[in-house]
Image 1 (cartoon, rainbow, N blue to C red):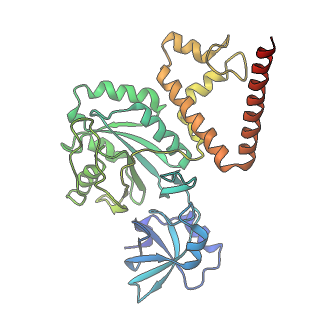
Image 2 (cartoon, rainbow, N blue to C red; image 1 turned 60 degrees about the horizontal axis):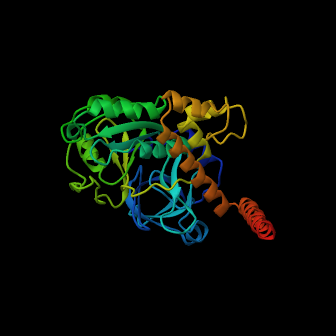
Image 3 (cartoon, one colour; image 1 turned 90 degrees about the vertical axis):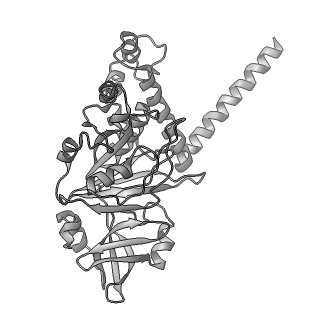
Length: 357
């Protein structure tokens, strides 16, 4: 398969020519498991490993090869194996905070043109989660499309679609059923030959079923969700790219139990552009959008044109980003410690003054 078939373009060609890469060829990571990769290019496909130098430098952080990456690799054993030496600069990347207590970023998908943000219309339907994915997607550099799956399992799918459209801020919303095929003709209109699409969403939203529907055959294992809460189990355990019949490249990713955002200030601003626009109209520049006079945000809530839950979710995401900044930015962490120290000093003084009086 031609290198162009895997999404190689002028951007990567220019990047490749700007560096000395002895004995290396550009290949694309088309599958990623636990420390295992599969790469593809003109020669076909083969398993790949990371070089010792790359392992020391990356330590599974942002420089670690991710599915969708173009990498410089040395072919071995007549093209039956490859050794990855480095990752080419990405055009886009979908990043989250690494799961667990470790404060580090993890690239889930790279060089994605369009992100298909999948949400289910069953008992696990949650517009607030859609807002979270949109914030991350806008930050990634990829174009978002919201896919509302399981329309056949919802009594009033159009009403829920309208609810999502209110928070989508102009992002296309596709109403589909992977089980019956409903809506897939409209969904496939966003596909283009050689373009890379990524399926992103929580466990149980039906991403594997969507892959099977688009591929025209069952290539991904699927399981039913729990009836009690419509939550799913991890049926996809690795990230990989499939070549669709029309020539587009579809990237499937494991479902996320939770998406912990990483450095998405600009993404939040774009996902909540309506709130940012209202905040600019408030009387005070430092308005907290609570009880301050002249607050345009609260005026819209009172008028019923802005959902209070949307505002609370915006505040929640802002708090998460502030917490993250304190963890990864030493200066911000120091300033926060000083603020807390002064606050507690003031509280102690207040109690001492009360005792004296």
